[in-house]
Amino acid sequence: MRKPAIMNKVRKNFGSHGKLDLYSYKNTFLIGIAVVVVVALIASIFVKVGNKHNDKNSAVNPKDIYVHSLDIGKLNPVNSKYMMFYQVSKLMYEGLYELDKNMTPKEKVVSKVIRDKYKKNVFHMEIEKNVKWHDGNILTANDVAFSFGRLKERADENIFGRDLETVEKITATGQNSIDVQFKSEDNINFAALTFPIFSKTQYQFSSSEIPIGSGKYKVVEYKKGKELILSGHKDYRGKVPGNRIIISIFPDSKIPYRMIGAGKVAMVFEKSPARKAKIRENKVSEYDFVSNRIEVLGFNFKKKHVKTLAMRKAIYYAINKETILNEAYYGKGVLQDSLYYPNFYGIKNKKNLHEYEPSKSREILKKQGFEDKNKDGYLENTSGRLEFNMIVSKSSKERIKSADLIAKGFEKAGISLKTDVLSKDEYENRLKKGDFDMFLGELSFNKMWDLSTFLARDGKHNHIGYDNELVNIRLSDFNKSADKEKSRKILKHLDQMITDDLPYISILKNTEGVITSTKLRGNINPKFFEWFFDVESFRMN
Image (cartoon, rainbow, N blue to C red; front, side, top):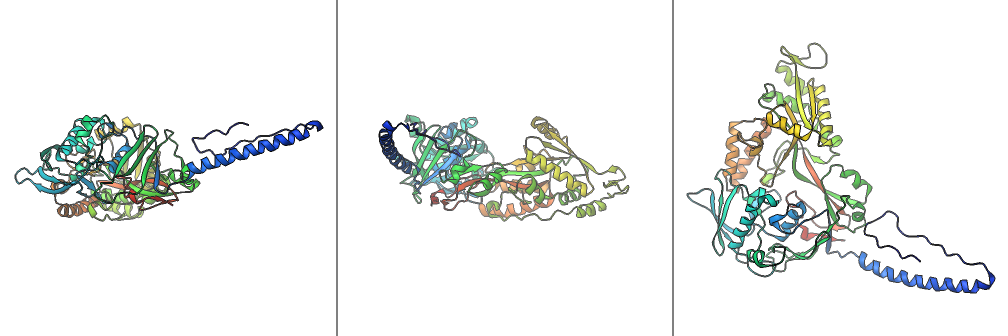
């Protein structure tokens, strides 16, 4: 009898078929019966033992939350660029600050903050005195300064370095006090101070490759390339988690939907809008959350026609966002005119101000001198037909589909549109050179969500040549502010100004999804900046 193979992956059909042939000779009949009985007894013993073994391994501990990951890399903040580690680090480590559900920075390890009277880019901070590492020792100001220094000097090697660009240095001024110096008083953002703090002593003198932190979860075991187990930190200042987070690493890029459906994996994160089809095929749940990416139509302000607000409004009415969302992005996105994260700093963003209305586009354009005089379906003025060029990268099939739908909407409004579908390099070159009327692309943000880079006069990625003096002033005011209430007031005004002026048309905010077992319970509310938001509430039913 062939022994059953131990399977590492879930398969659709499993098991084996065997056949026992008995000799039909009379003088061997009794021997044959005896053989059958013995084999049956042995088989029943194997089945019982096997069932006990399978029951032991298949039993789900309701406190064990299994999460799928392709890889997590090194568990060292200084030299890890894996997104899964970035998210897990939020559980293992604490920062001076953390982000709440609206991306508003709030004090975490910090207990007191005073802005320097003369040097407006310097802040004197005190840190909590009762913060314990996972080994029981106390976190000090030297640990904070050391962690920042290591991450900053090796910024190219880790995923946290890009968020530290606005911070010049952090200096320990006492056992529990530090000075934080930003590069400029014109760019103060405490979201940059959410970097992970790790133990200086343990980092320098321990043989462990995993720097210890003070977060709500600590590392129990790490089998590189296989599994990471986290459990509650008993000395955590808040509520100590009662569950365990187990990151199971599957190098195969194919997401194990069947394992999720069977309850073997509690959750997995998925970016592709096409995830909708897989969800329908399997017994799983899904929770969408807004990503850090916005699909936009950007205007080249050096071009005569699109430079006028009336023309941009006419184009706005010619775009059917609802159709784009459903036909190009499988319904996976959020329709919202604001370029800010939903409820950023607690400010409620308005949804779309206007609906798709090509007749409204024609009405606006008629006032601008454009009519279909020759009855060919397209508008023209004394200078000729109203036509535009739009560039789009072929790297996104959803975006190419979106471009086709935009062209159809333009046609109904009487606007001629020529779309150039380009390679990534060609697209970026033409974007930088300003060789376009409009571009269909993506704005991507870090956790500071700073619009200055796309809208300020000197913004690094202001490829559209946008220059609104009042918007420049308000962007600067927001970046200078270190007061939350003042920042909210500035932001509310700024958001309205940008939305009204339409430098970009927000097509949709991309969403990502967490696919979970139907047995998972808890406050499942992931954010792009913190996938495991409130994970301590998770249980398997």
